Length: 445
Ligand code: F0G
Image 1 (spheres, helix red, strand yellow):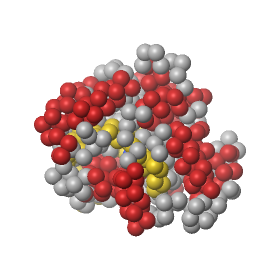
Image 2 (tube, helix red, strand yellow):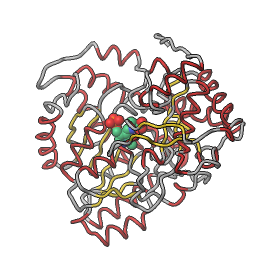
Image 3 (tube, rainbow, N blue to C red):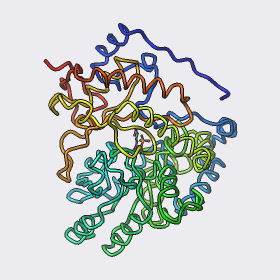
């Protein structure tokens, strides 16, 4: 490490006051009130010396910046997609793609939609349908690819609705909503076949594609000697395009893109881009940011880095396992997802057990986590499944040491030991869309 950042553990009274002030919503906390921040792995990575050096090479030209040329060639080489449309982050890419493709009355299937993905599908009047395999909903199942799509159900939906009603199929690598679980190459081949038969394009949400490739390399027969970029190409070759938040496997603090093989669509996306993000050679970003992303996208493919990264998740998993703490198994690529129903079985859904646990972890040790459950997805999933009730401990890339993670495990253990006393909460203020970001809570009476 060449740079360090001071962090501070606020005393218990300060934590209690901060919780009250934030309406018991951890998105509303000041970061200075947080000791270890596991809210998200998005945009929270530490950049490398090479990335910081790249930032100094910014060619801030409005049009035709050489940083965009480098970015475009990097993404083309990694993905094979010819048309690269930069955007300031993943949801901007989603906005571009879905505002072109999702129309009222249409259906967009995904293994599991993440919050912003689902919101963009729905904002355009389409229905977001989750089609993950049954194992994804069995939190203790050791199945190695719990992010997989249920292909028979996808085929059924495609046969029933037809290409006119399904503008695209999306698959999220890894499945963030379902525990950071990977999707296998074999499954993607099947999904692609189903899409081809139906004449529907397949798009990937490639936010965590390198982590997904790591699991393919480790778990899929015959893949152990294949490099991460090569696995990536085998995956991307199956798709018509992708959306990317470079804040994850691009190892940058801001950035993203849409990529596609469809030249006509790319033209329309660029018109939209100019309206909302910026000219197609910067897409809402400083050109130095594009340069840092070009370097970061390659660093994310490094096997030593990925081994360390996923090793950190497994280290935390092993510490929690030793205490009997329930979490989604096997541990995924970017964090630990606590199994809330097993952690707080005495709290009914109406008392928002996931949010209660998030509050309690902060109260115990100023660790910030996020609820992925009834608050984030509470109005029911369109596939009829209740949302999984999880608390995610997302691990930022290249930021924390084992000592920090051991502290986190200790905080979780302390809450686990007094779990019977954890009280529920209720939502007292709820915005209509993406309510988890802005909602306010109060202790249940
Ligand atoms: N798709 C997935 C699977 C994501 O996890 C995210 C963001 C996005 C799209 C949107 O990208 O944030 O750059 O606009 N996930 C973050 C998280 C916020 O905490 O998991 P973005």
